[in-house]
Length: 316
Image (cartoon, rainbow, N blue to C red; front, top):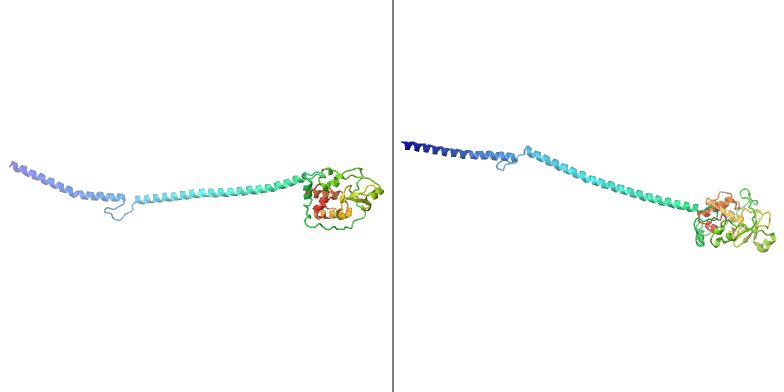
C-alpha cells in the first residue's frame, strides 16, 4: 500500500513537471515575438523586414542633419564670398592707388618741368646773362630755334616811318668816350665778337668820310656807318645827331637801321612781345621786347638786334 502511494505521488510529480515544461515552451515564442516587435519599433524597422515606418526620432534626426547641412553650406558660402569680396576690394584699392600714384607722378613730372623752365628763365638777370652756360656752338644752334626759323627767311618789308623821332618813347642817349656794351664780355662766340669789341668813338666828318665814304647812311638826321655786317652810330659826324641806342645793329639785307628795327618790331608784335608802335626806333620798349624774346629762346640778352636773334626770328 505504501508503495502504491509513493508511486502515485511520483507519477503526479512527473506529470506536473512535464506540464510545466510545456507551458514554458508555449510562452517562450510569444515573448520572443514581443521582444522583436519592441526592438523593431525602437529602430524604426518592423519585425519581419516590412515597409519602413518613419518615427519622430528619425524625422528629428533628418531635420537636424538638414539644418546642419544648410548651416555648413551657408557658412561655406559666406566664408568664400567674404575673401572674394575682400580680394576684389583690395585689388580695386590697389589699382586705384597705383593709378593715383602714376597720375600724381605724371603731374609732378610736369610740374618739375615747368619749375625747371621757370628757374632756367629766372637765372638770366639783367642784360647779357644767358639762362645756361653756352659755348659758341650751342649759342649758334639755339639761334635757329625761333618760331619762324624753319623754311626760307621772311622777306623784308618797307615801312613808311616818320621823319622825326618820338623822343618821348625813345629818349636820346648821350655820348661817352670809349663806352663798351655792358655784359658783352660774357657773350661767347664769333657772332658776338662785334659787341665785345665795340667802344664809342668821336670823330669829325672828314675822318668818317675818309674811312667809310659810301658806307654811311642818315636815319632821323643821324649818320650811321656800315662795317662787318653791322650799322654803328657815327659819333661826331654831326655833333647834334640823335641816337636812341649806342651800339651795333645787324645790317639785315643791307636795310638802313630804321627799316631793320621796324621789321624786328613788326615780327615781335606778331609773337606778342612788342606792344608799341612800329617806329624804327630802338628805344627802351623795343629793347625790352628783344630781351624778353632772347631770354625765352635761349639767346644772350643783348637787348639789341644781333644776327642770332634775327635768325631765330626768321628774318636772316
